Length: 150
Image (tube, rainbow, N blue to C red; front, side, top):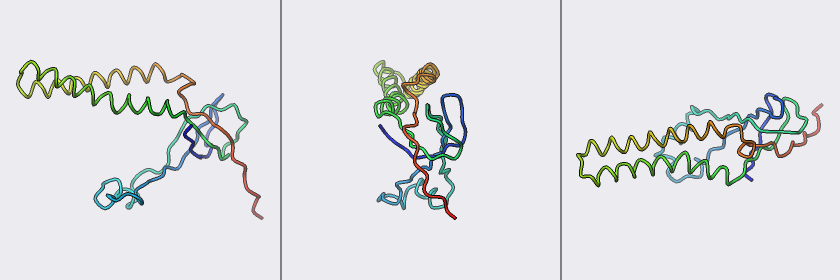
């Protein structure tokens, strides 16, 4: 289970909206000086907060600190579906078009077509599985608040 701390900002029936703070690994990266992401972090232009809708059966209040989790296999399958499948489809469609010895612009259009078809597939799949509770983040536990300051 991949876990992320956050703070409850809204309540729903059976779920909560959690605000998380995004972490950057730019300080430990050797390419940070030549990277656009590192520049965005340095300038403070990137949004550092994320909103997550997480399923919860706990009795929480707005402002509670929680730990949100998602299964590793769900995250891995989602990454493959969103990142790898379109790339594979682009390359496969371009390769098939190139096998027919067509001109280069047609090969490029075939690759773009393969990418577009995979994008439509990913979009339809995400809409059909959006309500599946097995694929949703969940609130694992609420963190205890520290002592009240005087």
